[in-house]
Figure 1 (cartoon, helix red, strand yellow):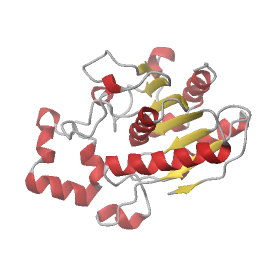
Figure 2 (spheres, rainbow, N blue to C red):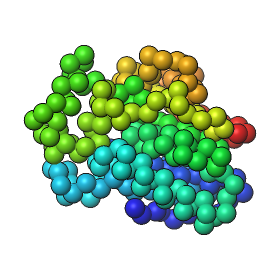
Figure 3 (cartoon, rainbow, N blue to C red):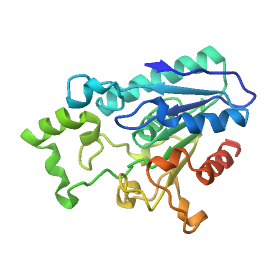
Figure 4 (tube, rainbow, N blue to C red):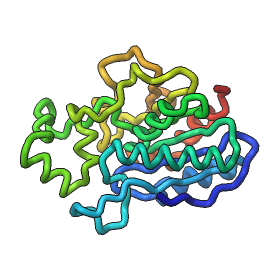
Length: 235
């Protein structure tokens, strides 16, 4: 685990958590925008998995979801202790949003906002209704080696996606998603159950016609305005 530069600010510090097969560099634009608004920002790198095909690239977000959540949680707890901050704001892109939820569930009394960007809460379904075969026998091991265990963990039926009904009260939970997202399409975003604490906002409902891809969610200025408005809303 490594952390980018962090500076003290008047509002809760912000932790940014990148997505799959990526590094903290992928959220650098978002970090810059937050810092220009006077926020203290820490960028985390996590989830290295050297045993697979992608392991030599230096990217993270590849390891099993539970292990990565523990890694991120340890870093967030250390940051809160070091800064003596009463609250922290967490923002996760794609897979990173799952770890943000894990942190909020583990320490709800210290998390003010949990903001998810294009996170597959309902689970990916690359093969449609047949996607559960990804968790069977040889295909399971092949996927883990080729793509990293995290990818299969995010496929529907893995048993490793969060139960949103179990999220504790306290933090504000927001998922920002785009109908243009091809990596995490709408069907992978919203679970069938709606009786949970996560508020889902589609970018196109706020800005009709706006084209925002999966990677644009961490760089689009209109998306940033939605993030900033959420962080400015009291816990």
